[in-house]
Image (cartoon, rainbow, N blue to C red):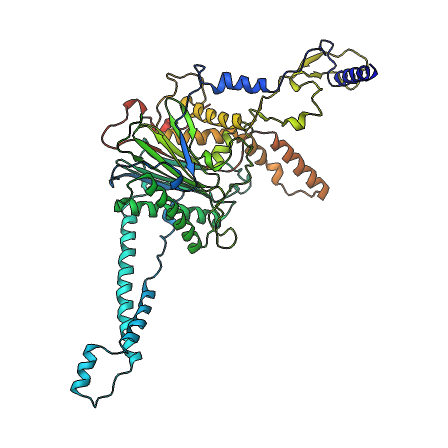
Length: 561
């Protein structure tokens, strides 16, 4: 038929234009895009032994009432590690000032009205000497109010001193390389003329407290740059940890529901401290590790996490690698916009926070697992698209018009020169720069696989076991080192001294140079940001130590590639 004749010739013309190879077979059907995803699932995501490992269940919701209630053991208060950073971390801000109780003195006005401004002592004086003038009620009320104000001030001062005493008991430079550690670094470029890093100061703040049978860790990532962002992050971590420490010391946490109730209250304390100190916006992620009682599962430890924003919590296990606990705060089946944090504490609209993705999450962990929280400067650099390991899979609607065209992996690159005649034979070769396409779910899985590989076997392919045991400090340094090396090309490009020389250039020349730099950087892997990690190893401190094989010398924290 004429229509089929035209369609066949137009298709051949398009194929001839985009692929001049004489060996191209037009009758073969194009390879579906799903083959690449299946290849990744079979060869990389399924594990070394070819079996997909089932992760423990993760429960999440907006409050603790949406999550199963697990009874917990009594929280011990013996602290073996308390560490914060960078540059002093949460110790650089004061604690939240509690609301004064002196307003309660106003209740005395009602008592004065009920007693008509007199007392039994005054009535006896009236009977003894009726000629004496009656004191003014206002003066007597003022004396009573002054007495109540003094009493309330003493109670308020006593409670504030108690909070300061609990906070001052911790040595915030006491870290444990095996069980409680944290690290931060700036991935931004350094000005070659001034020697100052862009994006200073580092707006990430973290803190961790390890007790004999429980632990609390928190990380905040200040939105944007500047002192206001760092102040907000410091206030968030200080307010949250102070609130959790107070209730742990009092022994108020008996179940996961109570833990989540106090976690949400700690976010309120964090936001209030930000408003008190005049900070800007920040993300926040707080995790609590505690032992469960009467638990018939394979583990006796529970991890409760509350987060807002894009600071995420993960668990590293020797059997299944790395899994994310905060997956309920973002849809892993949708491509995430990394420029949008999703939520933040602080005065977003002048006073209120943005709690769009505020999520409570819970999962079971095993003794020896490492719970760690990362800022987006770390987690985003493990994304396969950011690292230029994969490309985003296009939707079917976008590919409908180009469905008849040959796929990129079937096209050929011509090496003919511009001076060659148009019909001269040109040697062709297959393009070897094709990257696999991934959807949102595979993209998230590949991020976890990349984390697992870096934590378990560093940058080499040789290893003694599948997923070896590591310490909290080794895990933190390996994650940060990977992000540092991945983004090194971008930093070196921006640290070129020629970009900082004051040369007389027209506006068009300046725009063209900036455009060329942006295009060059866009093709490079990695993301420039502040990168921070805080980690805690699950276990009972002092009851059963870790094997001696996990002790690493400090010189082994940073490895040479």
